[in-house]
Image (tube, rainbow, N blue to C red):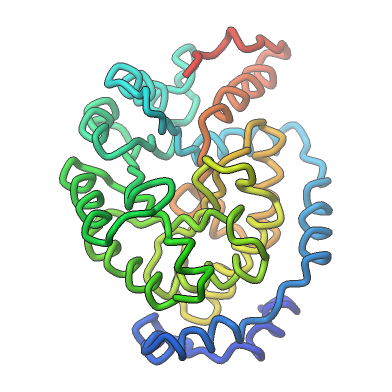
Length: 330
């Protein structure tokens, strides 16, 4: 049953209840796409932030907390995206993704490791035989300032090296200028170049200025075939927040209600503690629902988060807090 918001949303946005190919009329031209995106309901910023803050106060008891910590570990895209990345560092990261706590093999593996395209082959070797996926940023990450053929070459390089997932960045300049069809066409081209790899579309929400723009970008990405919509690159001042993630969760929920197609969400950047991660899991459960409480549909883009999750997990198991020496420094 729809929530009151979803029912209100359905009245305001007229879309077929079929697969995305039936939405071709929406993306037929720049004008029709603009009309659709600007016809989406405006975001009540005060209400959005109040709801996100309210959900963040939910109390999680010990048993549920242990479950939530393991779930969060399984949702981490363990990430290294630095100019100083070396094959050795990537191999170590892959080993940690497969066995986050070598002293406790009941610890779940992470969802993926995320690296630059030139490190994909190394990462694939490091996680071979495990459930851990290899994700690669592409399309001139993080700025996205490159010609389309260069972006597509970047994607093809990553896929040919074995990437299971592609994290692309949208052209924020084009989006903010209102060139929505250009952004749509780039996403669809990258989706095609990605082949069987799942596509995560990064909006860089900190640069989109308004919640209305985040909602529009969410729908634009989903219309273009994104498998995931992702908040940020982690390379700017404002990254994932409870409010912008809540807004994107509402978007994927409503998109599935209208089209039958489920799309994942990945908040990235700034999520550093177990307490933060659990707050985001509450957002998922209370907004999109339990169908998204799985690493196929929800991820954390993080580097330092995993260490805190491991320390909190060990504290729950032993009653003792071991401190940062308990975990490896990535």
